Amino acid sequence: MPAKRLIFLGPPGSGKGTQAQRLAEQRGLVQLSSGDVLRRERQEGSPIGKQAARYMDAGTLVPDDVITGVMLAAVGRLPAGTGFILDGFPRTVPQAEALDRGLRDLALDIDAVVDFKLDDDEIIRRIEGRRVCTSCATTYNVSFLPPKEDGRCDKCGGELFQRPDDRREVIVTRLATYRAQTAPLIEYYSRRGRFHTVDSASGADAVQAAVARIVEAAGRG
Ligand code: AMP
Image 1 (cartoon, rainbow, N blue to C red):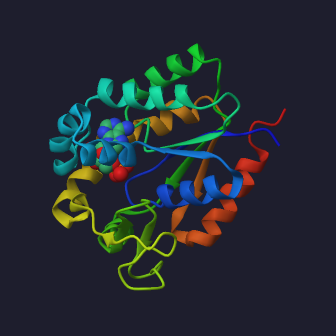
Image 2: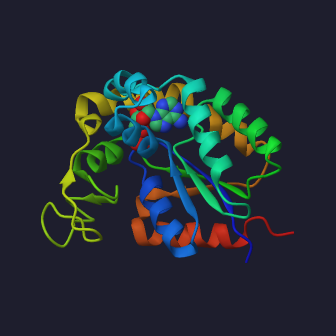
């Protein structure tokens, strides 16, 4: 089975990151999460991390050229033939256009775009319960995906924390940002085919099965 190249779209808290983690593990794909990349840059205190900080804390988007440069470089570094999931990138139409150009230069194309749908009340409920491993970035939820031991990552034993931008005040801005700047990508990608929608309300295991079916069929023929 050839390695797949995928884009996961959807509002914050829609489960796309969790599903990207699961699918990456299941199929040996590389998960390229733009949020994780930026959080790592911040931890390291790099110039990009410093530049991104105020946008991230406010729940707005870092400038297109900054994130596009970082993500295209990450794709370009993958060994030839590696499958990947772009998780959280692109997030604006200019980013999608830059990605198109970058992939063309690398002679790669995308097998499927998967859009994760979830209504705002459920998004807020999920984001408020989200906890992330400080060490390996695995995501949990205190209500419905709790770790086995309180506050500890099942996979690596790392400490779990609540992202500062997962507080309610910031979530509201992140949702507004999503609607204004990211939702137009649904139109952008649905016009070209290879576009799929998943109902995230059905729970992580059911969503995982739906994603697996899409990916299985993607890029055939
Ligand atoms: P996430 O973990 O995907 O929710 O991203 C956390 C924050 O990182 C966002 O609220 C943005 O400030 C920033 N960010 C992540 N991905 C992008 C992107 N593709 N474009 C601009 N900003 C981004």
